Length: 402
Image 1: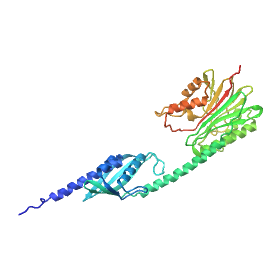
Image 2 (image 1 turned 30 degrees about the horizontal axis):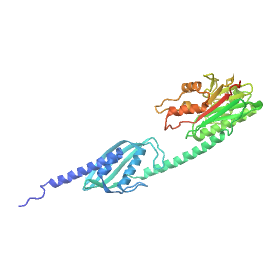
Image 3 (image 1 turned 180 degrees about the vertical axis):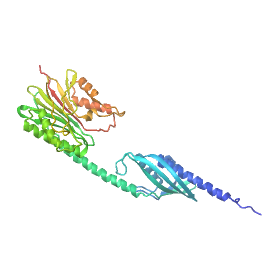
C-alpha cells in the first residue's frame, strides 16, 4: 500500500507557510519603500520583469520606473507614520490594507509644498512568484491626490502672478535716478527678497537745492504691501512738494492723516523722513516708527532718535523733529529691517548691535553698503534664503580737501 505524498494537514500547512512568506515579503517591501524610501530593497524583492499596473500620471510600469517614482515621492514627502492594518494572502496574491501620514516638504508635480501633515488609507495587491514581487495593483483612488495637486498648481500660478504684479508696483515706485549734489555722496542699495515686501526709498527735489530723503517699510507681503507702499510714496512726494518740505514732522503728520482713512486697519507704514540743506550741511528729520538711522563719524556711531508712531495707525499724530549738522567725512545710514532681522543657519539674528559695531569699524576706503552686504552674506552662509527685502541708503559728506 503506497503512502500519499503528504500526510493529512501537511498540504494545508505548506500553503499557509507560503502565504505567510509572501505576506512578509510584501510587508517588508512596503515598509522599506513607502515608509523609509529605501531603494536597495527593490532589487532584492522585486522581479526584473516587474509590471506596475496602477500608475499615477507620468509614471512608468517597470522596476526602474518604480525606483524613480519612489525617490521623487520621498524627496517631496516626509513620512511621519505608516501602519499596515490588515493583510490577506491567497495563492500568489497578497492584499494589504495600510494607512500613512506625512508632510509635503518640497514641491511635487508642479505643486508647492504645503508644510502640513496629510495622508490617508489605501490597498495594494501584489503577485509573488519565486519569492519575488512580479506585479502590483493599487486600490488607492488617486483622483483626490491628483485633484489636490492640480489645485495646488493653480494656487501656485496665481501666487506667482501676484508676486510679479507686486514686484512691478514696487520697482515702479522706486526712483530711477540718484540726485547729484556737490560735496555729497548718495548711494542706495536695494536687494529684493523672492516674496515681495513693502520696502521703499525716495528722493524729493525741493527749492534752494534742498533734498528730501525717505526710507520706509509697509507691513505685510505681496500685492497688499506693494500697493500700500506705492500709495505712501505718492503721498509723501505730493505733500513734500506742496509744503516744500519746510518741516519733515509736518510732512509725516499730513501723510498719516490721509493714510489712516485709506489703508486696511491691520496695516501701517514705518518711515524716516529727512531734509538735507547741502550748503549748511544740516539734516532735519522726523521718524514714524522706523528703525533708527546711524550717524557715523571718527570711528564712532550713534543713533538718530526722534519719537513718532508709524503712519496709518492712529489719526492726529504729532512727530518730533530734530536737526544735526554733518561735518566733512561724516555720513548717515538709513536702512530697513531686512538687514538686522536676517538669521544665520543656527537661528541667530544679525541684529542692531552687530550693525552698529560694523558701521563704526568699517574701512573708510570701502563703500559702507558693499561692506555691510559682504558681512551679511558671511553671517548667513551659503544657501541662505532671504527672508525680507533689504534696503540701504547712504548719505555722506565728502571729506575736506584741505
